Image (cartoon, rainbow, N blue to C red; front, top):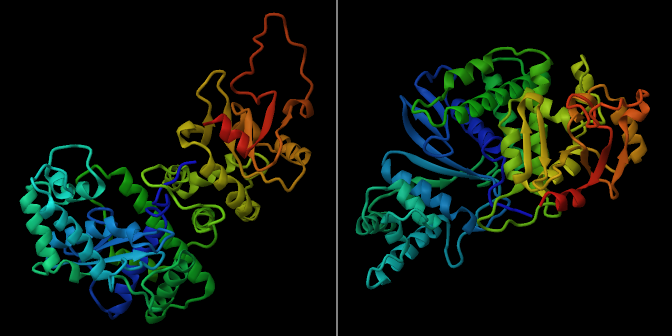
Length: 477
């Protein structure tokens, strides 16, 4: 089983929500008449997000959604943002976290912990005699490609400096000659905490929206609040997806504060396809949040290893809400999710199946075995050794009898579209179960002597097997 220290959804869900919350707080702290035409929110340029004034940064922000309070988890991120603050003397920096950050052992506070990190690097360099290239500072200044993480961070931030120049730079920060550390804070939320739990981020965003509507004399009914909230989620979602599409381009896309204010002042479409898609994506991401925060499901990650769930979620949460819904339909061969009535579709969403089956599959199964067919919205796994077999992750629980599941799959009018090439469905049952879809649909004519015995590629396979998660994991190692 593969793990990684950074949850997969942080860049697409928690990070975006924290950025939205922070921008709304800035708008709400000013008077309604304030001119915000020169202010903007930028994600993933210098740091996770930054606030711009006339195109220049006034604050930069790191967002870390680690299910840990250990300082060591945040040490690298704090070094990165400290170096950025060194390069931008009039900019403030903040780190936003899901859990509180503990200070290092024998360090009094947040600032002392960062300084101790720098002291370790400085002392190592001073005590390396002769200078044989073994210290982190020397490795950072070298041309070697395979650098330790901290050396790579130093090289990326200050690529032109020699080892002795790097030493003097870090020493100026450590000594306070450069006030980078003083300009870095662990963000304090309005409840007095220096962290914001995953379950609370939606609540505090809605609180800021509610206040913004109130001071603008806009009636804030529960429905209006929900509609505005989901409009903002859709705005952030589209922005993040677009940012990743244009990440290699020099031109960076930002969200103007005036666009956020305009969204507050406009009424939004009543419940419709877009609204439900955004709501679904938000709930889908929340199920991942819950899984990662549950120690019974997600154990502490090992260092320097990939997480199957991170990679799968990175793919799925980069999708637009409508495309994610289409992939979800393929994960539910036992549920008809193609109704014209959107409310019916919403009520048919199986959140327990997502939380306790699909996400567990995405976590357990080797992501390297993924086979992706974008034209059919199909995300499945495929064995590498012939005869190749395909496995579809599903939301099928073990609560119903397998014969009931079988009948639901066969009666689902969308089954042919989903299963025409997938012969194995991964589910949470304890035993494999094979069934024959065509046996209950129609009677076939006898096969002609010269007929190709193989199943047509546009037809449902004659045999489909429900495969337990442990068995699928073993077959897809």
